[in-house]
Image (cartoon, rainbow, N blue to C red; front, side):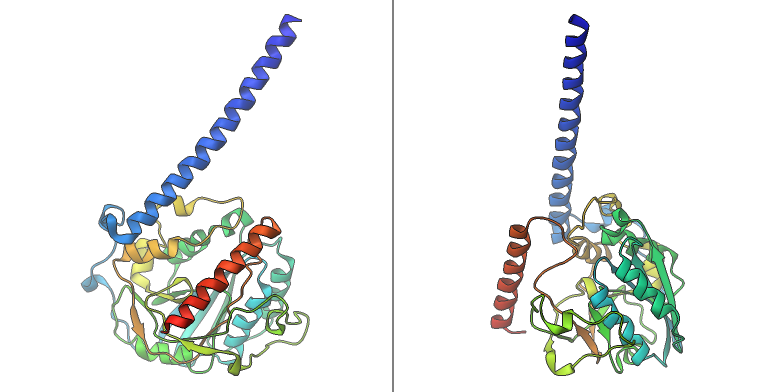
Length: 322
């Protein structure tokens, strides 16, 4: 009886220890995230972390025909990705060459099927580059962006989301605007966006088995002027990308996650590059905005709360004007 009791108590202690370590780990992660968000607000010099940012004089001033890598990612968002990839097919660039890199998880069957279909399309000036990863790596968006940045051979890298499209004239105008530039970070001065769309909106429910490419109705979109290089609008000099990666200096943002993580690293990236970005006047940048985020997991209550908060923030922004 004594041996059995001791074994039981030992098992309980081990369980308590594992629970404590999980709680301590979560607390440490939350504390780290809070610190990094405060640091990225300017309270901490970014030079304490980012040691590899090349000076302007050390960045190539490329001209003529440029190479651009577009880095996107998709988790349960094939219904957006179809529009993004279609925009490249319908409006292929002439003044630069594009490598379209998409990080995805093979468990996302809809995305996998969609990428396979686009692989069969030969688009002038566009190379498809599908990057399958396990979902724990996909759930922290900075991981894929960092891998692409460190490995890129392009002159410029456009980090974006799969709900953004490159419509008529966008990429050729970008090629002209980037001639000889050495900025660490630039972004489109104008994007054309939908209102926050509900799940039953036809735009969010394309037939993924229909013929590709698909198109959009431009009248559904209105002009917005971002004040900085936000997550889908971050266009980085290739030399900066190869030297700094995407938050490569911040280990927290390179850790796999068990669920989709909100992209706080967008702000940290600007902080590390010591700039909010330089705006460039470009046509044809379109983005679908949606009230609910299908990639998040959780209770219906939390999903509804997130959607409600997004609608409130959008309403405040629209009332305050550009």
